[in-house]
Length: 278
Image 1 (cartoon, rainbow, N blue to C red):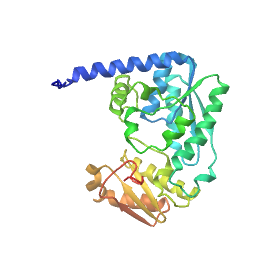
Image 2 (cartoon, rainbow, N blue to C red):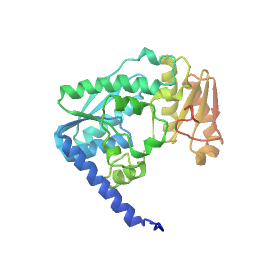
Image 3 (cartoon, rainbow, N blue to C red):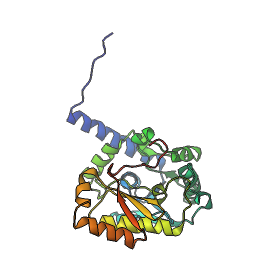
Image 4 (cartoon, rainbow, N blue to C red):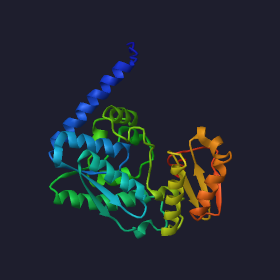
């Protein structure tokens, strides 16, 4: 039997995205009352905004503020919820000692700990805890997904089969400020596995990345190797970064953050470049 090859046009794709958007809202409505793990990133922002549309004040965002979360991320999360009139709270978390030596299962350990706390909070709110994993995440190295599965945390974006690009498309349509925001991750992901983690190293990474963002680099990773910082920037910005006066500005910023040496990774910006499968 011959199989017909189907080619979707842009309009077909848009319809499919709209269908998934409708499914997402229906999933959220069926939950009645939700607490959203809200980092302020692209995925959780769309999920929180959609939950507000579907459930009104029965949707609440909760942001974890811990030593490996940049302060600017927490500030952006607060600003977003204030702008859109969404209920929001901050939960402060201490450094989990099991993460001190940066084990390979750190994401699993961290997610298990933090989402257990969020589950307890959601239970007190008589709400369902949800988070922003999307369909594309299934094809990436995401050890934290195991923790979410074990804790039975629901992922409406995944249930609606929304991809990252579709999430960005809907976010742009809804005029959300995060529609083109680069992907970020906690500061622990900048430190190689098996490396002792200190408060100083976390603050060095945060200060370095904040300075680079101030210089105009939105997508950035600063990988920590003791007194050396390995900087990842978008490939199309590498020449600018290596040319004066930007080269000197970057070097000064990295040294001000506490590093002795600044290196520019010629491979460019790459999510999860420290993962075992990279």
